[in-house]
Image (tube, rainbow, N blue to C red; front, side, top):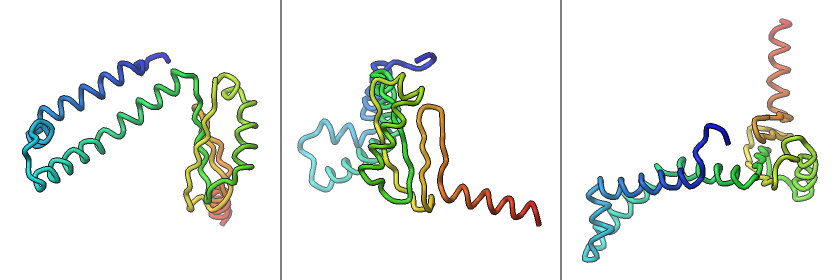
Length: 150
């Protein structure tokens, strides 16, 4: 993991950001430290706390990715128009285990993202590679070819 922070350092950074946010925002600090708040005040505090947590979502996701890399896991993002059937996902995972990147990884984690704009086929992202076998990309290529020939 050259040039990247180790998972413990990222966790320390995330926790420091959370602590700093709690201390710098009076409504969160009051919510956390004052057990005598009214229900209305608690709802306001919860709302602020949730918006803060949403802001931290990116940092938490980055931390999870670093932990996966640290463990030697390779996350494979498969985008398809509909959820992949289990047998297709299993076959795809088996095939990708045989790839160079798959052989280097200790474990593979297949994540299926559904995006109807793909129209059909799949887009596979793993490591620094993308394999686009989607119908939408083929339609785009065909349209470009037709426009160039006219």
